[in-house]
Length: 528
Image (cartoon, rainbow, N blue to C red; front, side, top):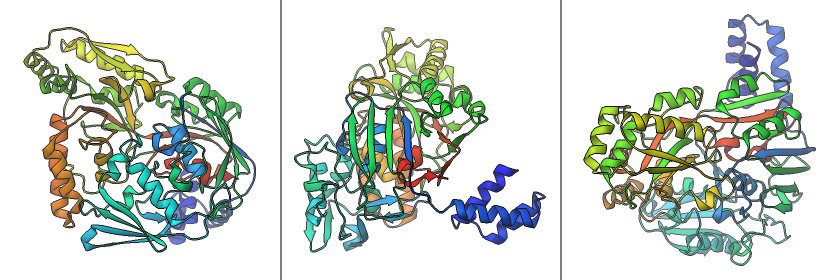
């Protein structure tokens, strides 16, 4: 009861619940008016950020090849470091609304074909220079360069021209896109001096913290940037990210007080871990999904029947129960779910069927040689257990799946998007267009299934420009059916984001857009 009322009082402090509703819930739970009033007063006081202290984060997903170049970020460490040191034009709030950041306003014209972003004035970079419209233009141009290797390149290909227009930046699109502001929130699109053209990995941005030490594979250290333009964020004096890929070491570090935050709390121990003294497990339902990905242009995964055999063989319910310990829901070989606007809930759920798996495997004409699945615990918590369960169900269907355990260090540079069949995860994106544009458009650099469908591409481009929501829903539905049937994505489960904090970390907000408060845990929290 106490935790439930604590939650409600925090909702009041954030303006999400009325005082009257809170008092009504307190009464229903048998709490006196005096106690309820006291809880509201305490919550209001706790919602006022304290400044100071050193905040330590133990984060999985980093490696010795890590870079501070926002364009090349592929993991939680890089995303968190980018949030600490940089800003994008806009962010997406936990409730799905747009939060203007370095762009203080934006507006479309010509039916969504042209978008103008008015750039905030007086913003300082960590090197002391004032951010200009030209810095914004060059940043977006760099991420549009085919040689940039930017994770946002799939988004930027939809923009034909980027130009300064007084104190604004004008983006002319190849086709109208009603969701463009959401796309500009992509965590790769951190605005850098001169666009990062010459020194993209120096960590200099406009963020609330400046980098003070960089040890790839070991540690990043930060100090508060006193000239940051927004005083409502960046509350710690100093902070650090420790690269801790081993989950046992990570949870031990939080329990011992070595760190104040960890990501990827193991689902199988989350309930027990949450009962430990001075520890809070933060479970957030959202768009994240743990997956197995096949390159559809590489044998034997270029055979649709083989792909379908593997999709039918996987036991989704078993994985949610045994790998996620119930902290999630089954997937349907799509990267989107009901948390996305305009999602079609009528798309049939693919069921586990050994009979269908055998039929498709036999129809594929596969020669019976081992089908190699690369995996590592760094791919997602419980990845090796999930791979073992997958292997067992494949064996029951007569499919010769073998698991190749890969080293954690270098997994995101040498295995993911390189080897033709591997374990992976996606944190999701705010809207369907962005998720599909980044990972399933034929030309996307992060098309990690090598899915190539002119029909799918045409539907995606049409949906971007469609302002009629009913028609847009139909287009997204068609895309969902097509990708589910023909794609190389095996999505057995949508995970809840399981993060852990010390009990004295205040300001936490569940954000369905991503784990670690969508990467902002070091930016928006403080010590109580």
